[in-house]
Length: 389
Image (cartoon, rainbow, N blue to C red; front, side, top):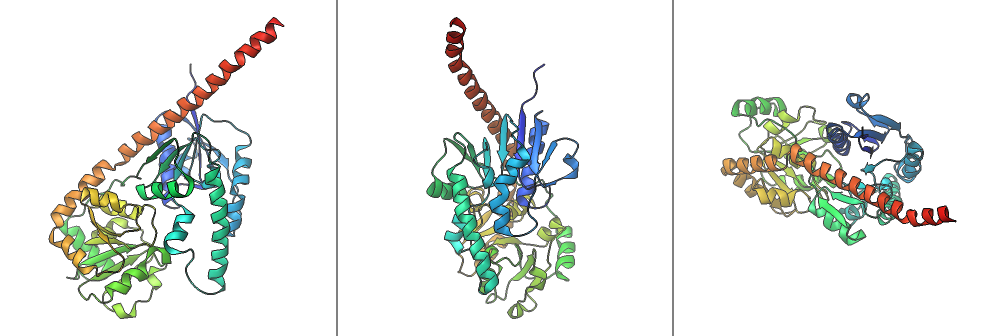
């Protein structure tokens, strides 16, 4: 009986701890469903996977962003302990020199180029900037030393183009856009209930949703700087820090709800989702919105934008012009944008993503076995000579 192929998935967290952790968990499940033997190098592992995979526990220092980043390569090697696998599938740049398949989610150098790192003043901001620049140099080294023949997967065409500029092309690569989750599109009654729950009333104003918290890179301040002059809009903001975000000039037209647990209710309350980020390699929140039937208005620096435009599921924002006309265009032609969202959600489904990812796993396995076969053939003449001697 032939043993199933083995794969090792590497990421600090594999579960629901964040967007990349959920993608890593999806990859684990895709491999398991295909019959692969799965090991994981992770600090956190979703309990649902604990009895289905081999868990090689990863140590992560308790604090210090730069310290965590700079030591991750050594601790990954410690967790692997010299083990060999048919395929290594990694999400952390520190593992790029080991990976047969690497999923690229974020480029620090691109973030620095687009918007600056850790924007702000004061000692805390300066320390954060210093740490980010240490990480930038280390990340450069990891990507330039990526494993020869590694199959590079990028979360958007924008990330792929940025990577080409900084680190060159790879022999095998694909812009494999992360999937829209399975979601139910709300009806009018659900929309009314959600508005009352989220806003406290069923406002007659168009509701512009934002999910990015108070992190400067996500662009809430950028959005409000424009929306403050547009009395016909209501801004509903979610994410860490948004509940405490002060917008005195938006009295009666702004509400921050903090961390959003019920994303279905949040999207049901919105007429449109705004993604005004200064730099967003993809913007998984855009994929979530589309899955819920909510069109997206995205800044030019958002990786999901080309896909949104292709399907007619969203519009482009230049980062400074009034957004009211764009919102009105969506509201006035809601059925057309809803149809675009439905097409995009169908084509960018979890099933499509799973098929493409498994294709790369299988190709990497063939590459690995081909290299081993070549090595075996090259050794045979030496073995024959030694036998004759």
